[in-house]
Length: 331
Image 1 (cartoon, rainbow, N blue to C red):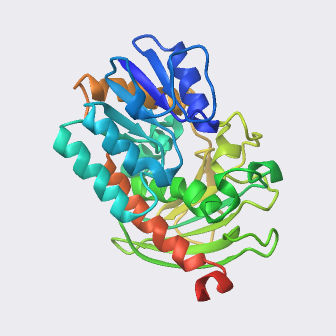
Image 2: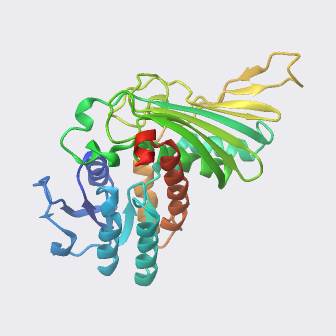
C-alpha cells in the first residue's frame, strides 16, 4: 500500500511512525502546510502531491476533513480519516458522498474498536457473561497540560474534550450496545474559563432500554480513563484502573481489567469476582493500519466506515450541545 500521511501533529506522527515500521506499507509522502518532514517527499497541500499513491491518512484538524476527503477522493485514494469523521453533520455527509462517487473506501480512526481487550469485552457481552446489559458507568478524567492548548487550534471551542475525547467513548459504547436514542447532560468551564466545555456529565439512552453515564473532565487529575487504564497512548501515564463498569441482569464487568462479578442470585449475598485470562496485548493503531491495508486491498470491509462514524458524530454533537456552559449556550 502506497500511503500518504496528511497532518503530522500528535496523532499523525504516530501513524507515520507505525506505518514506517510495517511491512506491506510504503510511505510515499507527507502533507502538512507548516510542520516539515525531511525523511519523505513533503507537500504543503493535497493538490501539490506529485507521487503515485493508493491511500491517505487524513490526520488534519476535523474542520478540514471534508475538504481534504473530497480532494483525496478526486485523486482516487482510499482514506483513513482520524476521528471525529468531521466537525458537523453536513461535512460528514460530504465525505460519504465523495467517497461513494469515487468508489473509494473510508475507514475512520475510532481505533479502540481494534483494541484486543475491547474485542474480548464485546465477545464476553455477546456470550452472555453478565446476562442482559442494564447500565454502564464511565469516568474519563485527565488533566491536560496547559501547553496542549497554547498557540494552536485547540485554544478555542475546537479544543472541547467532547469532540476530541468523548467521541471515542461514544463510539465504544455504540460498538458495545447499539444505537443511542436519547442524550442529556450538564457541563462547566469553571477551571480554565475558556470558550469551551471542560467537564461535565452525560446520560445516554440506548435501544432496548439500556442506559449509560459518562463523567468527563480534561482539567481533573485522576487514574480513570481509557488511555490510563489500558496504557495504549504513550503520551498518557498508565494506571491500569478500570474506568468503565457495566452491569447486567446476572453480573457485572469492569474494563479494562475484564473482572466479572457474579455467581449469586441477588443482593442477599456478595457478588464473587472472577479474574479473566490474560489477553495478549496489541497496539490498536497498528491493528487499525493493518486492517486499512486489507480494506484497500479489497480483502475486508471497513470496521468503521464514514457512514458508521457519522452516527457517532451525531451523538457527540448532541452531547456537545447539551453540556455547553450556560454563557455559551445562551449566546
